[in-house]
Structures are given as structure tokens and as C-alpha cells.
Length: 282
Image 1 (cartoon, rainbow, N blue to C red):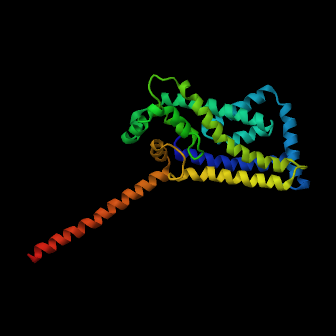
Image 2: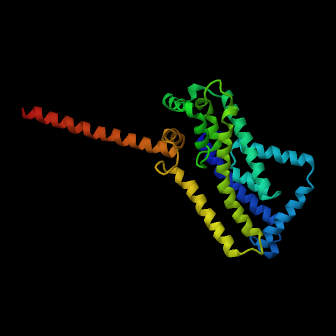
Image 3: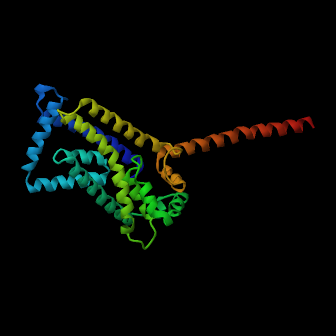
């Protein structure tokens, strides 16, 4: 479940379900007579669900907390967890709660990876590359989690090979916490810009639109740049390991290997034909 390809599928599926729930949220709680996607409808929906959440029983809150932690364990993106909490609380509390949730789930999944870890499940060369960064395991814990392109649960699953033996997991938690904080910050600021544009009636609309465009540009750069190994900001010793996890880097290497093998096959008959021609002339 924590493999890269499965995590990407879970990510896109969760975004699709999140958009469907958002539309259902506007339809059920909003006032459709004022426009379905209008600011008035959004404000009405947020106010209605916030009031309903205040009267939630304790067992209902316990179910919500369980669902949030279960979603983080499965691999639901932090931005969707933040958006879910944002409906009931303000931006600061929603960010802190979603950050704490993702931090504890990361610690839990790292510990769970130790119990299910088997060396034979990984290729020898890849395992050796991971074990080679054990001296800088704290730095690797930061750089492998700060970029959104690398799913958190996938990185957590490789922890047993990166982490030195007889070293408590608590030693790496500060680096993990800082990486998760930065990882969540840009998407959250982008979502806050959208939230302000939908909910603030008296604010300057031009300033709100500029804020949305700015954070949208930052989010695009943050999401796209790490996909190019030449542009990513990361220590060189970690790049080869990180891009072995992603299939597009593996496919590049496989295509290069196929092209080189094909070139060798093409060159071999040519050399043989030259030798044959030479022997015939003799």
C-alpha cells in the first residue's frame, strides 16, 4: 500500500473524492438560490457546518479523529486533511492539528516499517545505496520528506534501511517535523488564499486575486521543479536514492539501458560483416 505507484493512485483518487465532497458540501449546506459556486453560498455552507460541528457529540468527534488518522496512514495528502479540519476551525488551529496528525502518523509508520522489514524484498544495489546514507540519516530524513513529489508513507517504508541500528527513532524526529512543516506550508498558504477569496466580502478583490496567483505560482514551482533532478535543491548523495523511488527516473535509466544495448546489437553485426568481408577478400 505504501509503494510509490499505489501512493500516487491514492493521492489522485483522494483529490477526486475531495472535489466531489466539496461540491456535495456546497449543495447540502449552501443556499443554492444565490449561485452554486458564489461567495454567498460558500459562506453560508461554512457557517452552517461550523454551527453543526459545535453540537457534535463526543463519540462523533472521536470518529472524526479516527478517520483523520486513518486517512493519513493510508496516504491521503495533508492538504485534504487540513481542508477537512478548516471547515470547523480557523486556519491556525487547522494547520496545527493537521501538522500534529501527520507528524505522529509518520512516527507510527516508521515504527511499523521496522516490524514488516525484510531485506530480501529490495534489490541489493538499492539496499546498499540506502544503507550508505546512514551516517547522514538525519539530513536524509529532512530532504526526502520536504518535497511533495515524494509521498511520506513511501519514504517511511524505507526507514529501516536508512536508519542506523541501535539508534532510537526520537533522534530523527526534529528533522522530520521541520520537513513536514515546510512540506505543508506552501499548499496550506495557497488554500488559505482561495479560502479568503471565497469568504471575505469586504476585502479588496484585486489584492485577493493577486494573492491567489502568487501562491498558485509558488505551488506549481514547488510541485514541478523536484521532478527534474537537475533543478531540485538537495545534496547530491541523496538524489540518486530519491529518484530511484520514483518510476519516471527509473524509466529514464531503463530507456538509456535499452538504447545502449540496442546500439551494441547494431554494432556487433557490422563488425562481424567487416571481418567476414576481410576473410573473403583474403
